[in-house]
Image (cartoon, rainbow, N blue to C red):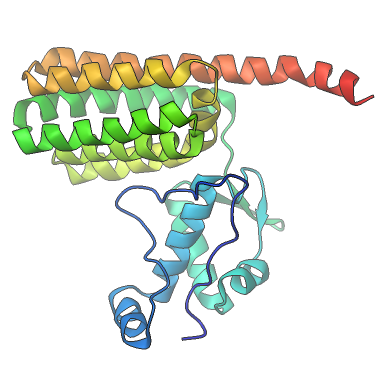
Length: 264
């Protein structure tokens, strides 16, 4: 089992990054029998894809960074073939881009493109909210509220990484509950493309309590079966996230000259 995926290096924070919902990478198994079962259930290219996806979404492979078959193969302890296949799958999911004669890069959409993605995502979320309000069971509502509880605990600790992962899991589950596979696949691709901007928006001071309150209001509307209101609340929530993204990007640009002067 020497070719099983190696554990990735620790991040800068004490809390390890959480995998994206429904696509979590199984941890390295403790014994040979479990390792064999893992390989039987998941092809090696799929395991490589999921691990790279986790590293990208966690920020360990930064947006704009170049990926090479050789370096990724060495990092994960696999041959180049599975890495090559994983790159193609990640391109299809919107996480990397291929540049002719230059190689593979972690995708970093422009601010204008991010704006367009937010608009499309808002429309999809509004539809999902209406559908979920019409079909959610009491158990579904409890599940969504439990996910918000995890977000609140992360917010209380000021743990942006944990909050971002819990937030991602909440929205993924909500769209999943809409019961439309094409919607879910499209939504996941859009979310992947927005990952860089979403984390920057959440990192702003005072954002986490506001975001958590918005999530609770959405679930309350879903629980009471108010389909139109739940859909509209989700639409407004996404567009508010877009505004937070713009404030974060404006703030980071404004801080750059001051940081340069301080360094001198």
